[in-house]
Image 1 (cartoon, helix red, strand yellow):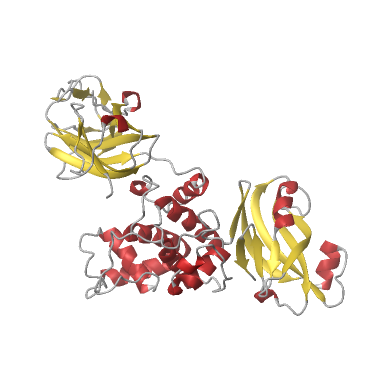
Image 2 (tube, rainbow, N blue to C red):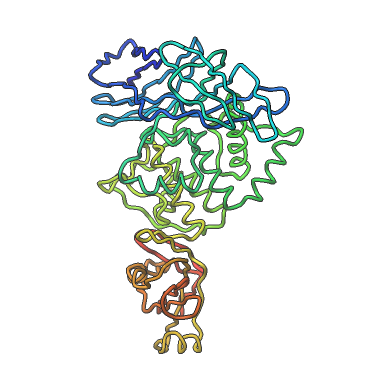
Length: 467
């Protein structure tokens, strides 16, 4: 049985543990402490507009949850005068999880708007709740500061966010996924937790929206039109912003239900199910449906309906094994696994390669003519062969030698698995040759019987269809 532990946070700094009846959770397994040095002022001022009340938002209190031997789910609850908010985080042993509690604070007084902004308020506001308090002198967007207390206020708990870090192997790719805006803040935690079907659809939809914003815009019109029928009968509790993503992916035939009209938003994905969804998304956005046969040690565990998808995502470098030449097709798909495969899917869709911190973008390929070869290459291939050029761009590379490892280790691969090494490289920049390059061409000599359209560009297990 999965172990569940509940930790209650209160302004009075009271700590209680309410584990399931079958769980014997000792205090030695975790330590919860206040982290006052990280407390922040409520610096975000939000004017109410007409008919409302001004308020401030910000992180008000911080904690550290130090986990020792415990592994499982922890429910964090914040209680202020009976107003409770909670969140569940999956924790691993020997880690420290910083916790931020964000609140909305509404002063119980009016601040008059003067010609120069909000005029200074000289009164000191006082209010004390439990044994935690803060105070403010309100001025022109003045922040609320800690120290005394406030009177006549309303405090609303807006969010509890547990800061987590992904595993070392996933750190860089997860960071890129977050930086691209594909992962909402509430999903930037519990990286080792299994991702739900709803959450994965939301992240996947952001990738597709970035590639095809016009598709998403058109569907939003369909979704909001009178008479639109949601295709699932168990999504009543799904937030509308998430539901539109689920319905959009369903309209694209990327996501289907689990039977009997159900979507199962809280259901967890297996790795082979994820492979199927990733393949459908890639093909829908124009990636050629090609794959090679995988030979994992647990290949016999792959369902027949997932065999092609597995070959596709491995061939394109979107998914990899879990170690020991295993794919673990029926294993659960964690958040960090999902985020790493999402950024790889994005790279495939955008023709992007990451090489030692350099971002390279595929911009096309072509057959080299005789005049181009003599100009760039200085020699012609042997009879029966042709030279293909694969072109990439990057702004900001000042030393062309940094790209030699990439050009020297890439290959062209034909449908029979034959590989062709690069036979030359040509760099160009704003002024032509030399430094400050922003484009470079990699040349391959291939039998003329093999058309460019049948080849794939390959680098470190990742393939890119040509042209």
